[in-house]
Image (cartoon, rainbow, N blue to C red; front, side, top):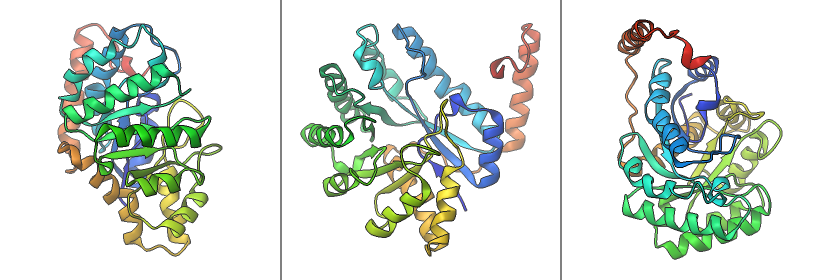
Amino acid sequence: MRIFDPHIHMTSRTTDDYERMYAAGVRAITEPAFWLGQPRTNVGSFCDYFDGLLGWERFRAAQFGIRHHCTIALNPKEANDPRCTGVLEVLPRYLAKDGVVAVGEVGFDSMTDEEEKVFVRQLELAGEHDLPVLVHTPHRDKVAGTRRTLELVSASGLSPERVLVDHLNETTVGMVADSGCWMGFSIYPDTKMDEHRMVRILVDRGLHRMIVNSAADWGHSDPLKTVKTGRAMLGAGFSADDVDQVLWRNPVEFYGQSGRLLLDEVDLKGTADRAATFEGNSILRGQRPDAAES
């Protein structure tokens, strides 16, 4: 089973997670820019975070044989803070970089006017940079939030096949399916969706434009929920090819629209050599080699 986890926040995870993911078949991931839990208060804090996604986290994933991509955006929750809206001015230079495969996560958290303005602007940026869009639907008022999301996507002029609407469930999948957008599902231990509910949706609606992710982050989550969904699919009578379509070919097709996916096998020997050089340079600078993981 080969797996592309199209939505996972590895900045919040450990190297043990990378090892477990690789052993389970994960060979590529996309890490969307998101809310870190502690509110950021200035644009520079976002720039440091974006630089980490494009540099250090990409390198860290490669050490474990996993290709790392990211999406970049001002997330919906922090769109409400006027100290953070200046991020919109620096986004263009990040959206032009290798490894950035979409604008995201964008969308709604509390469905405020401020969130909508930022959402609309970032849809415009996606068009300007010829990138797909990853959309976060709100955890509260999900039906209303998803409906308004689809209205704004339609008004933006973006082709629906370039938009992935995420965090769906049984109450919202129908309207997104009808819109022509891609349908994303986050599989969680206690909240959102679980793998068995996901399988029932796949039985009812088929595999086309379906995206399954773990969305693992700093909360109670599981970076192996993708492989567990694959096993549940097999147990329900889906074929190995069906699993490959949902867990690999679908995310590759969606993010491949960016023209920036790297899916060749990681040279683990070369990566190990680069890691040794990095650690040696850290020691020369008087830093612990593992300082970034402490």
